[in-house]
Image 1 (cartoon, one colour):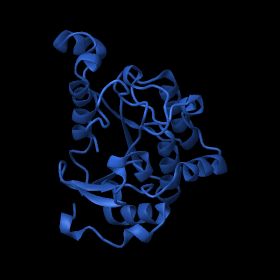
Image 2 (image 1 turned 135 degrees about the vertical axis):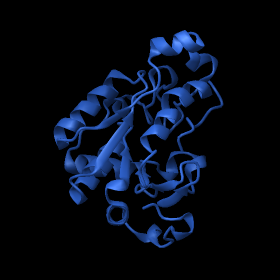
Image 3 (image 1 turned 60 degrees about the vertical axis):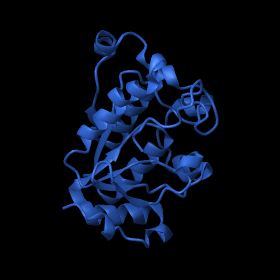
Image 4 (image 1 turned 30 degrees about the vertical axis):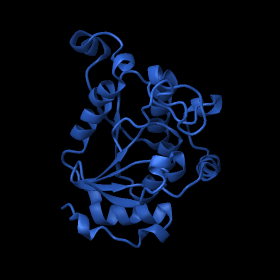
Length: 220
């Protein structure tokens, strides 16, 4: 059962990422759903959570425009951990072109994100109590005050950000410690990885929608 927003604990900020996930598993059980973007944070959270709850559930939003390296990372994580990641999708590239014209991502990136990411996310979270993201405060000014557990007003469920206070160094230290698969684009200058048409190399999130004023896809 989903907790009311006023019941969000206020003492989780002092807990470690593992402790936050332990709290989430205890509180939400199988009502907890983990978003995977196959960036480096996804590798950390998947490993960390499966150590706590082997039956944890994961999902991804397959836009149909992900990098080949991202799909390869997806496969590598499923092999490494023996999990099957649920898939939610918007319209195919061909269907989107038929409905909205070619290169919607160039003409209207907000509409493209809504179709390929935001709407599928609503489907993924329709019947869950809480979701987990890899959001970190140092990624951007807009994320700088992200709590470790918050109420997602838009979806009427809780949102867990176990890595909120982690630095880039923390993430890489964990990945190398446990020799986890990770997206090789990070080694090629991509600080953040999204869709092929809207992502370029750059530190932090500088490479996302680099030719527009857009900074988020609308998920967070």
